[in-house]
Length: 271
Image 1 (tube, helix red, strand yellow):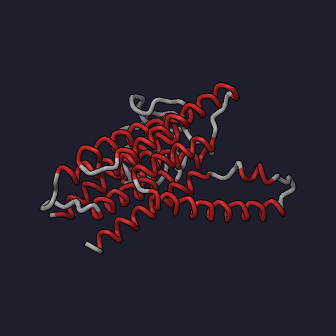
Image 2 (tube, one colour):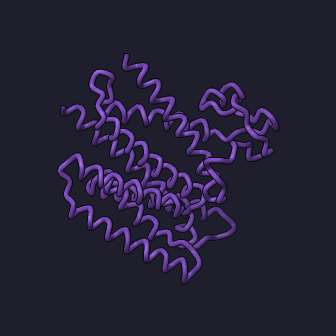
Image 3 (cartoon, rainbow, N blue to C red):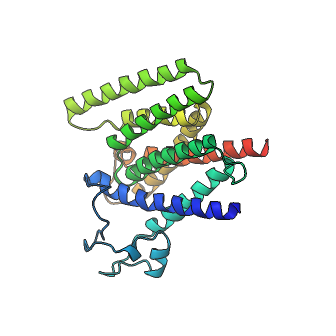
């Protein structure tokens, strides 16, 4: 019986993945992500119902647009599969079963889905544009406040811990607004710090600290590879130019999700 539940969860996850690819493309372009009909980014033709089934449509269309025959980037297909798989993994580790399904477990899983939406959207946009999108950051702040209220109501949460995070949120948002006003540009580092607070609220301090360590390792390797490539390039880049091409939050997101899965898996096998 549970296999049907996980199939449904996988389908829901793949639908989220389809939304992620749309949002990552549209949000930096300031396009509507809710009301505007899906369209091919190459020929701008509106997509029909048969074009919108996650995973299945990509396979049956041969990875090409039905109308202009332009190849569809494989990332759409990959992200839909990964998203569906992540939803199933988290559902399993959170103990989502037909026989033990409770309202608390459903709410916990819903918050995980909201958190994954935040992390994946911010990471995807950062990977494509090397930018922390403020609208997604604000979404992260909102869901983290909702999560803190939920934990305070149903659990024995430390209210003082969350008050500290709220104060940090306010200070960083004010600093980011001042920076934008004075220099007419978003501050990448402040955006990452705001995102780190959201990560800490949804995971915990140890996971986030470990994520930062793994991120520093990943960024260092990426930097060294870029430097080696630069040795054979005619146009040399400075260290600062190379650094500005590295998507830091992308590494943070991958590290954080993997570590969260490992922690939940450890808790699961110790039950």
